[in-house]
Length: 272
Image 1 (spheres, rainbow, N blue to C red):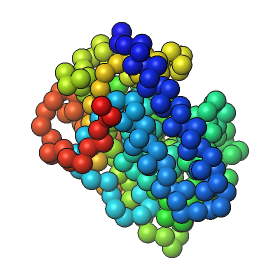
Image 2: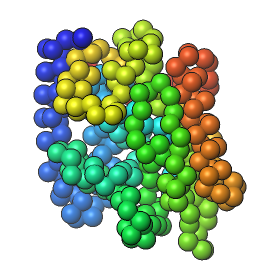
Image 3: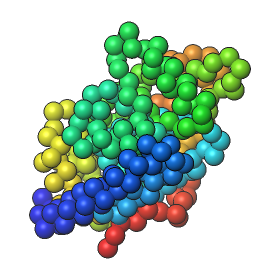
């Protein structure tokens, strides 16, 4: 399905763009330059244009800092979509650090890698706390894995431990965000076609990327929901459920075409 010529052109441009910016980001991170926080957003916006991803936004990302953005997770494409809109660092499972190329890119975006083993928890909490205290925004996928793009998996309340602040710090602002792949070349994407963009289970990444790159222009709707705090809900479980309900509602509305607040017209449009 799709055009192999389009796939070859897009992936060639994507890897060329990536390899061109990696050395610059390495230098910026090594120097501790402020630009190391800004360059990834520029990089991801260009990646979206190269790969034919058109982003429509509803609502606005919180302008206070730090913010914990919690989002549903469909595939590796979510990284460029969210990275194009949010100047923040991702929270990812530790296995990602060892992935070819994408592990390097994650490290250069100052990703916080989470080890699921209990003995690593304290060190991770300290690192996350330090990032938040420095004003870094964090992006978390609380489902813990990716789905088929048609539904939202339960949010793991344990992952909301990052919302806990040390004494003396104000409550951390948490903003739920829903991501939905809605249209292909302007036509609604049905339930059966949407998994072409989802990457989950034991799918091979290389063949999946080729298939995605061969398709036309995909529209992704990203909705920023009202913010919340752990203090307002009293427990991680209650906050996780609240955020999941908002994200699930946003996904359902976007997939069904129901009218939500008017999309932000500052879209990230793909290259012609």
